[in-house]
Length: 174
Image (cartoon, rainbow, N blue to C red):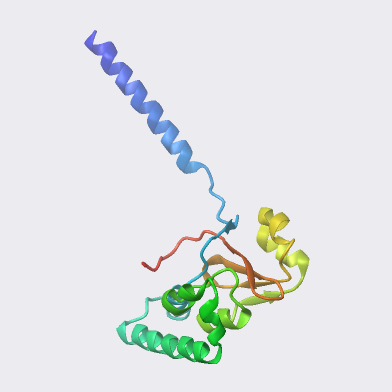
């Protein structure tokens, strides 16, 4: 009786191991963009750009300089555009330094600089959005591509959709 019980456990363990290994062997698609409720943050774009140019994280002095530059840019923009205080995304812009739906192109540039790619070609925007294009195409007139897989879609007024292709790499903690 004891042998059959042990054999059953071994068989069950072997089955679980085989299923686990099969799950690991299944390719995951990192090319499929996901719709995001929150956009990229200035800090994560800074980290991505430093890593892309020097293959390392920014040091203390570089982070401090980035924070000071961001403070200057954000507060200058807020002085020049006081109407932003009435917008729903004001906190994300001022405190979190994060892109949100509704941000104007100038606000996006203030937070995360220039995109790697800009396009107004519907075919290219569709390729970038993949299965999300059916929903996004109703509003989007332009797409901006940023590091870490971010794709921002704009209409005439501002950001209407934010997509991200999941990528391996570092994440900036909040």
